Image (cartoon, rainbow over all chains, first blue to last red; front, side, top):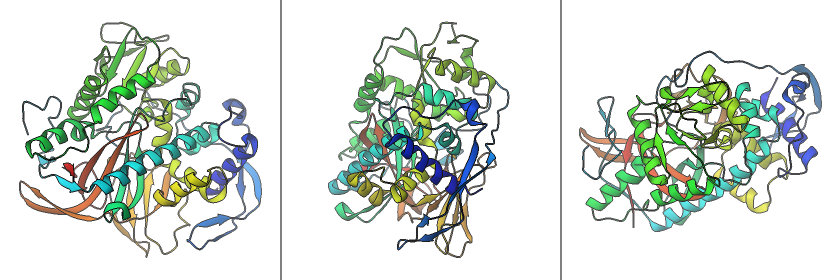
Length: 85
Length: 387
């Protein structure tokens, strides 16, 4: 599944639901979301004059969210070096 | 590097290599103004985009936010506050003065370092050289930002970091001093987490924790997960805030670009900001056919996991790091300008990276570093002055 296409669908969906960013959450609880199907575009689009990819494909659905978990240690014990960023 | 005026900075030599240099680079007043404008403008874009991202748990997953931190990010978020207390943009600045091209490479919003270098060390070097310090507002802005974020009375405020890490500890001690808060430093491994509270080294409940420790690292430790759960329940306040963690993911750059290119989310003025300062960033590698690009992990640090590709798709530079291999973003490449500096072992010619601090939503100082094509842990600190 193309992550960029998923991003495009999610962004479009949130804008459709909220109208803008300044509203409260419209997402269902996480447990329910895990039952939701992912959505994605057809692999269609074109490059604009700046060379940037513009989506034109249709939206489909299918698949399930994949979630990973964590390991087990005390505070600071998983650090391998500087936190510097 | 040792001087009575240096209270916090003691990592002038790191890994037996020189880190700090002492010949300031002078940047023009016009360029400084441009960097200030870029910093505060990019801050506003991030503010709006992070607010957007927090609408959706699925977007947060796409950002690489661990499942164990999603509830914390959404429940502990305060949309009325700036996106971070202390953050730093890293810019590629090509050209001079008001015509300079400034492009944003990344936003180090969650656990930025370089704080002591930009404040205390730059102040000392510019004072000794009798030149102007463009970062003189730094400490005052840190104090102002903390007071902006802290709107209620806390009984026990703790600042923390890895106690064994000299640079991280010195950074937090400086931030604690600048904040002017009635707080104390406790190393991370002395903090205890139980089912219903987080306690300091004396067993006293902590109600505000300022941490120089990444949320995604908390999220892979059992006690860290418990700490995030307590924060999500309102039993502990954390700074930097969760919005800073969300903004730290480089996937935010792809979200901003998507919002800019394919929606009307940003108004006209904001679109101009994105067009001027942001680079195209995507979540897949099929969008840069025949063009140089950089591949970066969502939560990479010190250049770890970054790979630079040329127009033929061949690797030009990379920093190997097995820790950062997931949630990659693909960013159009911009070349950092070449700069030569004086070091103890002679001249060094490298690439100049301009860091710019956003503290409480305000431009607060510049951090210059000169290193390889990918700026890593061993890049030289370069003091800055302005004309």
